[in-house]
Length: 428
Image (cartoon, one colour):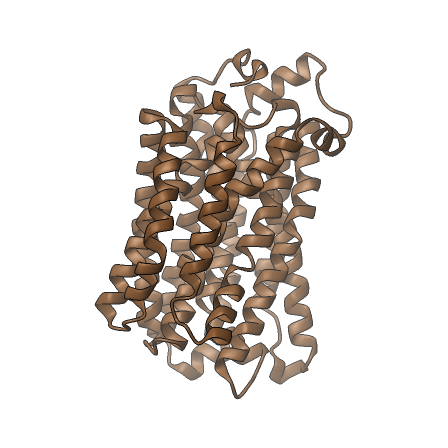
């Protein structure tokens, strides 16, 4: 740990438990929305990008998905500034408030049949607003939770931040699965797809309520009391934390690309390439996400037990070796081959997802942590994660090789493995 971190007293176990749920709830909302968009992408493609070629409509839908991520670095810089200047709690209060609006409005959005070209334009605008607010929520919640945690439990607490995002994805997947399975096709296209997005306001209201009155982190309070708050954190981050930010960007590539290929793109792949029914594809994706959630928490525990660097190294190497064979298995096209491939990919990816959150936090000095972490992490997610479904789809479309996305996962993991070698040794 850095000298600044060593001087900070962690919260008691009771204090850590008090802040875990408030830290997690915003991630649930954020990834609930993203999961819904990904799982209902085939429906959204038909409603907002009508085309005779289903794959072309899906490409446009995933392009809008990627566009939303382009706003994340901007949101990360803005909310990171709030976190370093006004406190982690203030940052999280504003971010969840701003996430609720575009999620709800998406459920009210007219389709292409109603307003023509305005429909995809407004869809893009809402995804940009949602991406901007998300840019502060996920990295901010990780910082908030890990700074509150006892040093011996940072891996586990960090994995809970990640698993809460997956829980939101799981909730979105379950809702997407239910509406696609229970509603007739006409009802799903007419109004059924709107209900899951509108229901997101309930999660937002609960999250805002539960965050009222929670304490800020010992790290922020120490910097505030010692007059160490940076006036312009973004400038300070680029001046003092450039190497750590580059390491963070590299480390995030493998996990970001892997997450959005395995948990978002794979559903559309099962339906449009392997020709499985939508409710079957969503069901497999939902069960895979549940497995990933549980194994992510286990990985956080292992990071505390054996060291984050060791767990990350093993996980990255195994992902490099296994990505292409597992995609080849999925391309067989039977339900059992797809289940085996997706579940295996989810299990292997959890070694990164459960270990990286706490590892990220200790890369940065506490006075610049929110800004440096949010900006660099969200650049990586925007460039590598948000584009992953689009890249995976284009790779198949251009090459005709159904296992080509495995090459992208493999390359991303190799970059992360190189970045890991440049990370400071004091956080493993």
